[in-house]
Image (cartoon, rainbow, N blue to C red; front, side, top):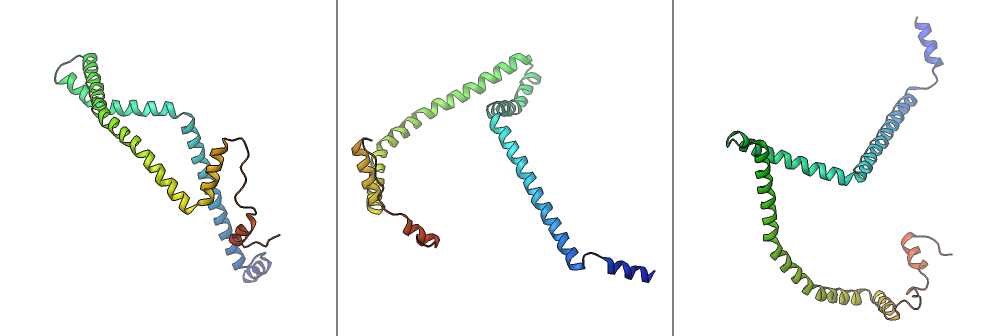
Length: 175
């Protein structure tokens, strides 16, 4: 027997280091394949959700509404002895009435904020224009020129040859 094991060891195709390297490679390949599979599943779920988003949104909202309002309907039905249909009608009327009242309370605040926003927009745009004219004068000149021309003539690039700055950034040789 010992002679036979010696022969088997001599006939081995790979040594211990190579076998360990193959194991590590197999584990790494398995991890890459598992990552690709998980990414494919996530992509497929995102596609399904994107396709049926209107339906899923309606179902989710109706499910949440049913879960929230079911205990109240049970209370109206069992404790106050309302018929089931009347309990649901009273409950939905109260819910949507409260929701509508909340919206009516928020409309004046919303309108005031919209008016305030409309008064602040011109000043904000002027501040942005001043900022861009200080820090990006070429861009401001190009935008002003294109606005004055009203699209009648094509705009010309501000930089004649963009290659030197890009080559400085990327470290390439200039041609």
